[in-house]
Length: 230
Image (cartoon, rainbow, N blue to C red; front, top):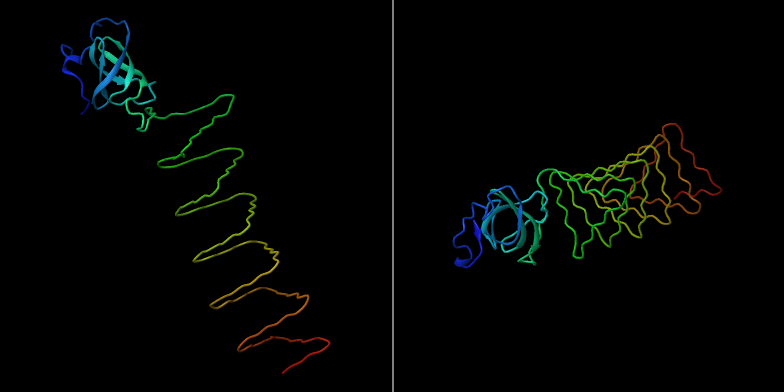
């Protein structure tokens, strides 16, 4: 049970388990300060005395000890309708509802603005559905154990890109690359298998190896205006 300090004379002669001076069904409202908490119940100190109240279903801002609240009472029931003044303004304000909830803007758009950042905790899963989406950030980082992306078409534009992977498998029905300059360095073994292959070099072609073996099953042809061997 959480409590806050109050003078003994403030709650003298009152019974928090009943609503002072309200034995009928007429609703009464009070400005009250929350001085004690027991689970979901709060002890509210009003001008008429101390009463036990709970946060109403429509009270989204959850009350805390020391807050000044608007209390409604009828019979033996008391509710916190809203928080009028927070005691600890530096602490995180909590908006809470029971069960499923939906925030909807009909006929307009919904904006969420935060000066010092936005943290989203989706628990078991996060689902986002939109016809179009646009994200603009200075820098971004995504950490995940598994990532799957699928679609009809994708384009990416970068001034510089670096891809690092322990294993890389690329499968495509057709592939085409246009490069201004290309350098490829392979520390281990490279093997190329193709049904047919052709290289077109406009200027010079140089192949150098410690040991070179050229094997043709049917025929090997060397054709040129000048052929030099050795």
